[in-house]
Length: 393
Image (tube, rainbow, N blue to C red; front, side):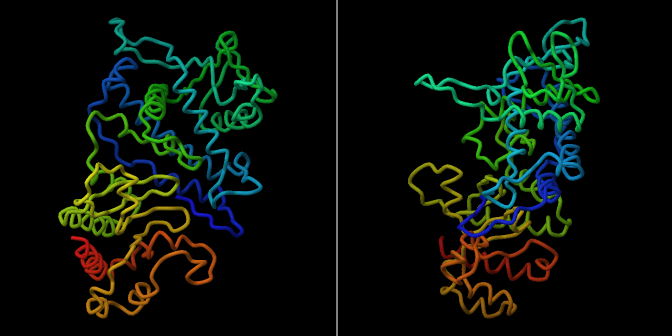
């Protein structure tokens, strides 16, 4: 999660945010997997799966466009909440979700069968985008839209930069991006197209439904779930955590991926439970919760974590260790390299309170970068985590 315990925040350039976001997109999506029954009325399973792959490919392009031209669209707020606080990304996510969710698939039919499962669509017809619409509260007071007209136009302009086409559904005329307002209604419907790969619209529709109807928690301002192409939310069966972890690790060198996956399996075999937490940062947390007397949520498990894999724009890929039992195995620690001993001795906690330093996320745990230097101490890390875990068993 983003951490701000006061002090001046220096926001990262949008190019770096784009590179970070691109790493969150799944590199390998299986060709076949069963979908939840709720999606059967959208299109055939095959077309939905193809649409999701097309949407994933669009996201790669989206991030590339963000890196090269995003500075013209994405502007930081006057008082940023974190180093990657770009409201533009939150707005464009909401816009895509609502276009997909409220839009009606339309267009050509590729089969004489006329069964819905055989349809192939090339347009979405949108008659409402709630975030762009003013509302009246219970006291009759007008509330402005969550996304202003100018911000909505900026988002649509950027999406055209990425290959989308927007037209008036009734006149088939292109949208005037110089207009001050974006009128969406039954009489002024928006026609959304993606000409270079129309099947993307089917994927967007399915992903948007999953984002709104299957999301366990509300979307936080820095949780761009749709921009991660979380296709597993549509799967009929719960995903294998090891497969999810492999997706998370895919940008890393193969040797680091192997180390991380083996460490994951080693601690699962030791009785730990792995849970993910995604609120800006992406975390795979490992907790010993076998003795719990109640059913725990992912956030409950995360709160009790002993250590975690983490990826954030602040720290990159790393391991955080919340070591609390080091006094039980000091003889083991004495055999570690000096810099690792010093890290462990320093401990973890609020940087301001413990070391009178600016906040660097020290409350998350002792940070060990998951980079090439990790390989030289991989056995020491394994031994350290093993000994910390044993104190909870």
